[in-house]
Length: 413
Image (cartoon, rainbow, N blue to C red; front, side, top):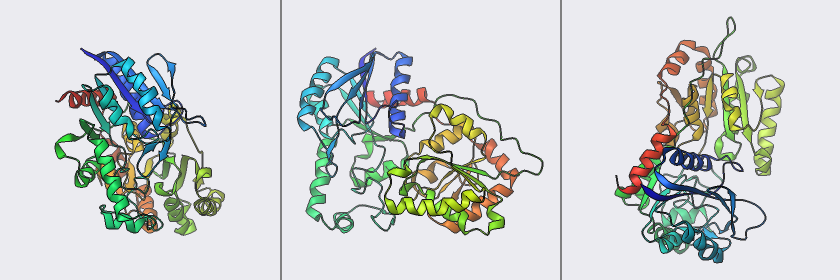
């Protein structure tokens, strides 16, 4: 039996519900249930005004690390002196045999080298959730300002996106990141699309493997009951309302349809954090959503707790994922598969990889408002096609199956 396994995340699920935080917590819980180690612990970064670098106990085997990022360009910790101090003491006391790291954002790359230095025999496995190491634009691989998709990094292209920085800056950034990645034994990508991007960037192909984020077991929801003459016309967006997530594309698609046609559709936005976005984006969304809500076409329930997700999905027919960046493995796609709701998604990256066009969902031109409008109209009108896609939907990987794959990869399987 393994002695100790440590899972590290850049946020705790109780305080932050992003996909990486949820995936890390589910891995922690699954490993504990499986009884594969004498001890399984979770260390999660805790946001807040105090970034002392101190580590405190949340509950048995769960710890919070009060730290943050000081340099986002090179992913350096805001409290670098705390990495070899509090973090080193924590590692020395725990003595992990395997460390699963689910991010380095908000914590700093120095963490990886400190794990290797303090626990030289530990197996370190890093799950990559975005393209942060490759792209300085929040890891989106989208060009700043224009939202044009980027198909590959180069020193010249990256300096073109950030004219305030030189090609030498990007050379130093890449080699700084790769030097810290040398401390990692193996990498995990939740999608093959992300795996291929990192191999092209320079990760050895034999050190990175695709393992999907797991989902809890659960019964598929029955189809939404239709009234006499009803159609499969209820679409829903779930997630953060940011410029990269494409909610404005959906709203514009509805707004551009003739009024008599758009009134045949119903869109729900189960999203949060619009108020935290840039003023121009907020103004665009507000200008679009007001008339649509007056028409009764748009309903905006807003943020939700994950325990409420099944109830919200029960009353819709389609899940829409209109992101205008590549995505990796959106949790909402796995959740839609879990609950049996066909998916409309942008036709790029991790979205296109996880949705089988014409089988369990439909691919739509990324950022193309006309295509989104036409696709929603045709999807709503064809109840037989919805039924076929509903039947074709395959359940996502179970969290314990994913945990077994993580463990096998860590120990060399």
